[in-house]
Amino acid sequence: MTGDKVTSDSSVRGPLCPNCREPLRGDLHQEQVVPQGGVAMAVTYCGACGWTLACAPARSEGPARHGPMAFQDVAAPADEQTFEGQFQLRCRELIGEIRSLGFEPDVWVTMINDLGAAGAARKLLADHHQLAVTPWLVRRGRPELTLEHQIGQPRWAGLFTDAERDEAMRRLTRAKDAAEAMTGRHRISALRWRPLRRSRRR
Image (cartoon, rainbow, N blue to C red):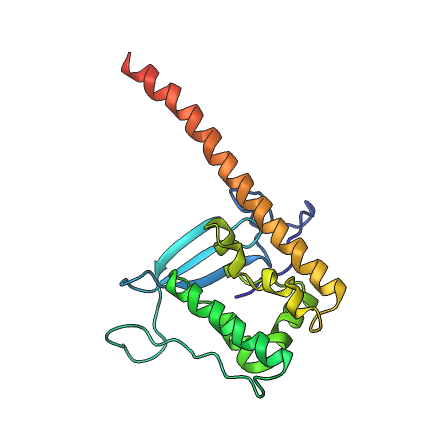
């Protein structure tokens, strides 16, 4: 699921993320992740920082399937010669690459099939929603596969307004900052743990 815009309003009551301390109400995400050659997993995590809160085998809503899981196809554009058609073809390529990395962006696919790729991108920006795959890709060093990165490319300047392109870049920058902050916290924790382990050997 896509989530609401990240907020740091401390007056919001409810459960907080144990990592970034942001409210989880309205920003709790769940996505189906399919490891290569493995069983589909339902991952629940904080939409603000991407911190994993729960991970369990995904429940199938239909008859059990044997072999590789069937993915929903990204619809072909109505006219491949238009800018919107070309953008949809590019998004279909991105989704194929993302799936090869082990993530199933089913919400993005559904939105593309309902609204078209450009329409889906505009709705996500207008509704202040971000695809769950964006922070996932950024944490793995693949920001070039995100929708936000594509929106900012010069070749699609005719599809999106300057305000939409600026918002996409802000979201990508925010995802990168959050990933760097998490990396920094893990590094500090490791440095604190090493002296403790050495002291126990004495």
